[in-house]
Length: 325
Length: 163
Image (cartoon, rainbow over all chains, first blue to last red; front, side):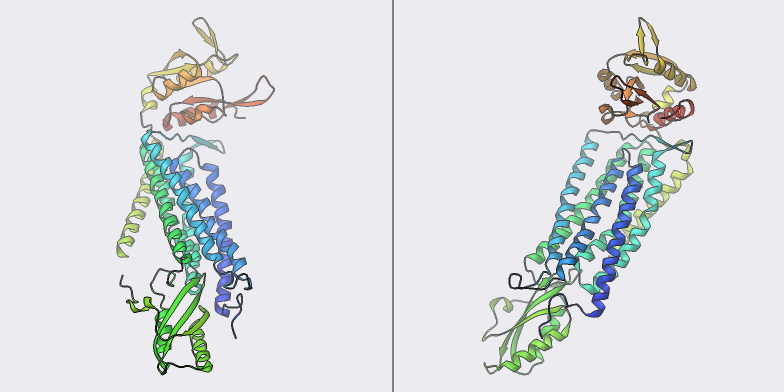
């Protein structure tokens, strides 16, 4: 039977998906706490402001994941014959472009503060009758919120790998690297403390460069998938290991002379087309059915499998298929 | 892979050592990039006065009003001789930016647009303006002179009743 969209995940992956969803909700809650806490102390430091915006942006991929999580479960229908799996990629693209553009604005702000020789002013706060330099509070908040984000990131990476979910993987790697933002803003505020006013803008520049880098990676990876590039693994391994495995599977059929797999990604799963050249130049229906079943058995990601018998493989298969990186 | 790891380790190390160093000399922090507090202490405090009703009154060569008294007390707390420069807000703000005055007073509200150009203290008191609206008053300081600002806010915390 052709597996229906929405029921395509095996039990293990379904559990993983629920876990990932829970982790993303926790991440959003955590981000809300960070954003509120930083808002109380943000002040005039460009590095702190940049880190604050970075915290807000970190929610984007999480929202994209949760939103598209609702859509990918939808059943396919005549108007959407491939299902709704690609909402993951669309969400991924939107998050990437947002990161890229906001990162650009932040780089501009940091550079213009440097050029204008702006000296950031950070005053004191009255905490229970004590006059305390606000910079200390900024450093304390940033140090406090650095660790949990890394832990969340690690947990999410563990869920992203078996799910073959690039959006989740990108979100998790960003969370894992989030502590660097906190360290940079601590360095910036510390610099102000020592009278090194420029260190603040430099730290802001480092943080915003990181945002741009994340934005570029996400935009690129999402765009490439939407352009129907050959399927790759979550960490960019090309081709996806499943492709050579499926080709080996095809070769194990004695009656197949030559074969090629064309696979593209539909979010977490793949749309697989198998081209086979039969030795005798002739096939019967049961043979096609066997091939299709064998391919679908290789992995849950081999989701939408189409088998096409041909007299000759399409041109592009004649070029070397492996990429040496 | 090992390259990024070692780079991360270096970043972490720099961050950690900075925290330790910062904690070690918390009394001396923040520092003024232009050294305002040091040059004012036991020296001269150059105060910009922008005339404002009962807060800053200019009568010939005598200056009166609650804010004038306030800054005189502040100068005294630093062992500094007050020197007054009278002018409009805009010209005084420019003088703050160019390090020609150390402090500007004159009924400046906490919503002042000048805060984009120069530093300001936390509000130290609250008044009712002509329209009957509550307004919080601040003092303006040179941008980024955080030790001086901290000293002034400490003085305000000790002497004023914050709204």
